[in-house]
Length: 214
Image 1 (cartoon, rainbow, N blue to C red):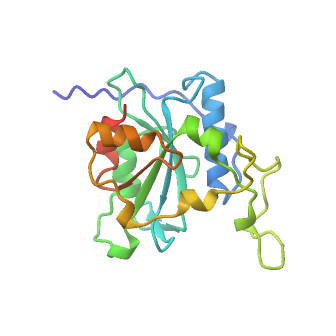
Image 2: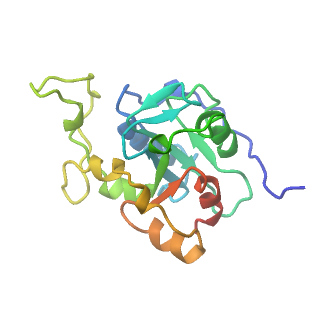
């Protein structure tokens, strides 16, 4: 029998969280903050990881090819001293909120058909405490050349990094297959996850990564 335990999922209503369509990176930033504040996660966010999903073409299919995003962002929660399975918090998914990572991968990430190489999904996994410290977005990516909004922005002020940086979203969404972690040995993973931009892995490495995180 497997030693992995699927934890009892907390009864959470996704509509209770701040959600602005097309601003998934900010939605997840605030989701993580709320999970810390309401006691579902560690108060520092040490058990939370922000995951950017995209590829070099900025065309990544989610939900078995049904939805094509330029990028998508989710939160994965992994309790350090627990055998429970990591949980995925995705405010844009129709799956249970949250969902076990294995179920989420099966339903939304692992394709039932062979994707062309240029459409393969990659994952940037960033430790939430570092994301809280460094992430910034002035929403410039959501403005048309004439300055008008492509999509209505959130009602609150833009997120500014602790060091005063106003915008670095493109650093998180930049994806190149050559940056994929070559090894998931503990020392390599520990070093990578301590960096501002976290760990960069392929879809075949994603679940294994969450068993190797310190």
